[in-house]
Image 1: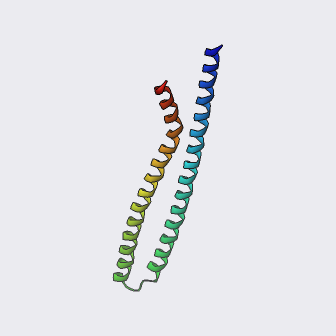
Image 2 (image 1 turned 135 degrees about the horizontal axis):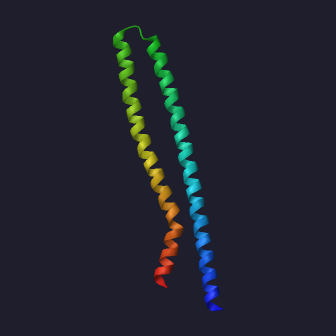
Image 3 (image 1 turned 60 degrees about the horizontal axis):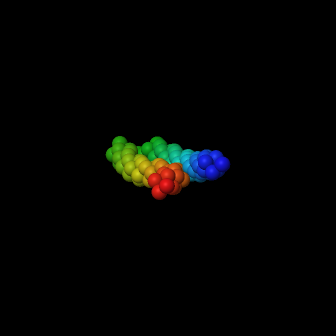
Length: 110
């Protein structure tokens, strides 16, 4: 009877850890989706503003200046966004693994 209780407890712990891990994945994926949508919206708005400026440019030099400024700003924004996204993915992995780490540490100590 004692073995059955141990197996039942182990199964419950595994299910609890899986639920917690999936919850962390769900929250992390939601954060990533929100961040991606915000970046896409911001990028679209910046592109639209640049096109409006470009249409209003009176000289070729001014048009080149507008395009150069936009390219520089877009690149810097992309690098910042890539850094932020990599941090979000790293946090997602850490949070999803916490429940599993608990199970492993329990198994090792027994």
